[in-house]
Image (tube, rainbow, N blue to C red; front, side):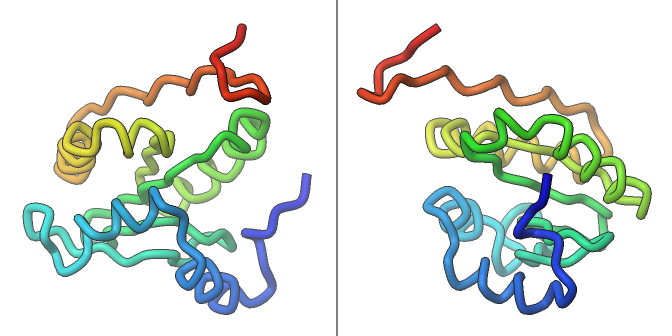
Amino acid sequence: MGSPYRLARPTDGARNLRNNATQAERLLWSRLKGAQLEGLKFSRQMPIAGFICDFVCRSRKLVVELDGSQHADAADYDAMRTRKIEAQGYRLIRFWNNDLIENLEAVLETIVRAALGGPVEPAPLPPCRTREGEEGA
């Protein structure tokens, strides 16, 4: 499976992603930028191990990824990507976009715990949706 996030020149891809951030990315960035969260300095759309990571706290070696529904079908690819980033010494945590939007404060608390080396709970899978937007099986 190919990915638009694995590029020959990651800085070009990172710039494009910064300029076209999702609603969830803009929301989280509004709370991470300027070391607002417990003094942790984050960068966004940073290349690591040939991949572009959503948010990175380099001093704490922490990567925060926001996943939309397209990631529900990309578990194997995401697992490989996580292994390669973690092989560079980073801890990677993931959140579903809808979890972030619906419970921002809990996500921020989890990020702080992860930055301090504490345990984090994995984010639950989003509910399946039909074309009409109703929850399905």
